[in-house]
Amino acid sequence: MKPTDPTLAARVPPGQTLTSKWPVLTYGMTPRFDPATWSFRCFGLVEAERSWTWPEFLALPTTVVTCDIHCVTRWSRLDNRFEGVPVREILQRVRVRPEAKFVLIHADPDYTTNLPLADLDGDDVLLAVKHDGRPLEPDHGGPCRLVVPKLYFWKSAKWVRGFEFLDVNPPGFWEQNGYHMHADPWAEERYADQETHAMQKMRAEAARKLRGA
Ligand SMILES: Nc1nc2c(c(=O)[nH]1)N[C@H]1C(S)=C(S)[C@@H](COP(=O)(O)O)O[C@H]1N2
Ligand SMILES: [Mo]
Image (tube, rainbow, N blue to C red):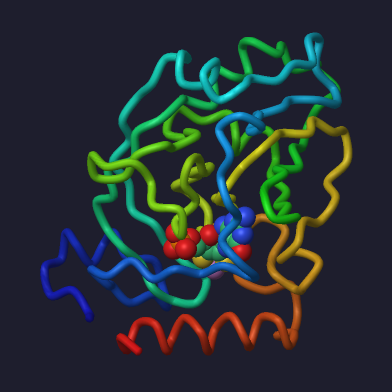
């Protein structure tokens, strides 16, 4: 779908097409959530390493962010209403040390993605537990996913379990597989170099899901 309304068109980054569906893109299987063992942990270059249990996490302040999402496989979906814990509430509590410049996001099942701390530390960045008023579906990252609206959606780790604060910038899962280290959709920071096999597989799967197969 190409938007004809110019204000909508201005919200769609170059090379992207709009969809009202929400494709599921996971490398591997949707993990099972166990509220008794789930935790969210912050470690590395912080003054106060800590972790939250599921009930503790649910007691944190929440916010609502309405944002557009842009997948590197070329679909964009506008006006997603995410609700959850602002990442800044977490950053304040662990007191990030000044040497920390990057964050490696840890997620189930063995997924990682890397971000500059400056991109994680935004007022629209949250640990979402709801989408459009309903608990986040397991396939979309439920019970909790990171949402970083200004970057391609692979940086928004589903089933997020922790932040590791670092003074270096190690590539995460997709970044090791050829995706861009930064991922600004407006600059089309898609790939580092050439498509790897894993990238081709993900792109083919996304195209199939958009066709409704
Ligand atoms: N843990 C985890 N998070 C992940 C992924 C994944 O495979 N595992 N895929 C990423 C990719 S490539 C995209 S485009 C989005 C897709 O989110 P969705 O399935 O809710 O559309 O999640 C990102 N987060
Ligand atoms: Mo993606």
